[in-house]
Image (cartoon, rainbow, N blue to C red):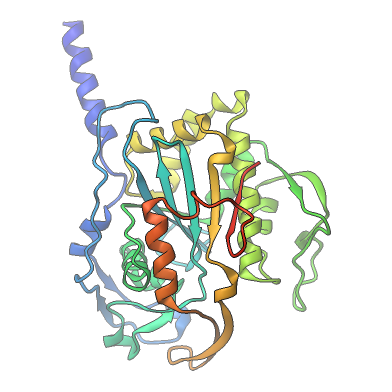
Length: 355
């Protein structure tokens, strides 16, 4: 009798562990109807039907629990929103990164997509009378339910990236996770970081050079500073991400990982299964820190510019860049050839590793 109960319970657990925690990208492509356009844009609220012409294949299949160094490569679209509430139906994509997870090589590579790229967004022209907007608004136009898929479709259409999964994290969750870990130890580079602007001279935006421990709110502030450039902002995010990974590897924190995963499950939006989240956590505690590589498109290709936004009815800042060039980098990224096979510090390579 006990054996029967244990077998039944095991089967039920395995079934649960392989169920996505939210709708998958391919399901959303086929079924999402978006009602409404964000009110902050000052436009009417007609219905947008997402164009089902850009299916996003979900190739990573759920599998029985196995060692986290013997799984197929996975590409995840990670979205950090500027929303402060626990909801994921509002806000814009404040940070957009593709994360390539190579379990067999125990390597994680991230590629940042600048949010101020002026891109074609499928499905918005009928209501907005334009098919172009900033990349970060694609998440907003896709909500309340289809934010991740519209952003994924937009990145696929413009740059050829085909993510298999997505994770959406808002600011509150990030702060809570960092605080739960007891803060992050970071070393601010020489000269420090001064994020003050003409409109905000708060001391909280100043980070002196040298080692220090940041709480959740401070880590978030550092990651969001972009008064110098969005590329420098990416460097700040990389600094925080490396500190987070280092913290999780500490013996006293590893014991907290199951509880943190449970917190993650309850507070993020993702189509990953509990099994896959456990496998990612496993990899994070095992792989060498130098195998975490942060990449950005080479800065030399970007030129600051302005373009007229017919929705906001004003000129807005955008990055002017040849999308064909970026598509080439994305293709190499997805194949694992860039920037993993190129030494960091090489001319024209915008990449760095955790140390």
